Length: 400
Image (cartoon, rainbow, N blue to C red; front, side, top):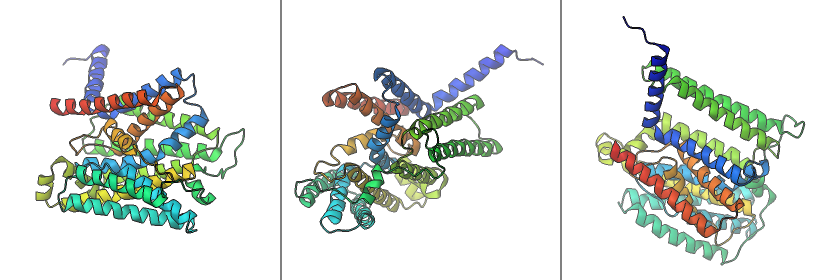
């Protein structure tokens, strides 16, 4: 009977940790990338990046990208692409502006109409892709041109605003402090951040417990504990910083609800598993009884609604609808998904990955702007980052 020494045990543990990291480089790699990028810009901007006001602006500036990235992820998982999201967002923002300013509708009614129209836009494009088998690239490229033109027509090539104060709160407002802040801190924000951190750790621990009961645990405990400790600490740090300003913005709460809903849907429901099956192998999924056309159709409807929501939030933030609204949004949204680990071949991707990818793009935009880097150089850098992410995906796929 042989007895392992401490050095041998530590070596085996280190080997297991490294082996797991190599097999899950997508999940851990993008978190590490976000941390490194934030640390780099925190140093290069002299600490400006992590100031409470700038963190709040970072959330407001990227909220609509995160929301659309969640919808785009489902499109990419099914093996398609949507190039029209920026134009649809701009069109719905313009439509909402006309309804409120010219026709006197209240913000809630105008927003409801905008979301409904967004769903119809997604349904029209999804029907052509799913049932007519027109390539999504062509359908949504046409949609990008059509809705850009309709935006100009609806707005009359001029900006429209301002909007009712209630509508502006969608993007500019902050949650009230129900507890009552002391010492300059927003206590309700601190409480919500603590609840969010505890909930994430609890759900992660419960999922690991279920895996252990089924004999399916493969993540070493040291990595599991370290990952959850890091996420909880990061949430509390950001919560503390934002609580020292005005607390959580309303739009951050909207994002949190969407992330929770879609995260649950993609990982814990039948429809979520079927979406991945469609992207992994559509023919096999169809032969197994999955209604692939309907899932593709619903993915585009969902994308239309989320693009509409993003357009309304963007308009609320600017307090006006402009003909240029939404230009280039589709590039940042698609880049966020690929940087966050989605596969260009479909069937792979996570909601949190798309969110992390969106914030990587957001931190880069924000940090480079603070440093005074020109828009031309910013575009070059973002393009290279996107290309690197896709090349990394192709490399991993070929290696597997």
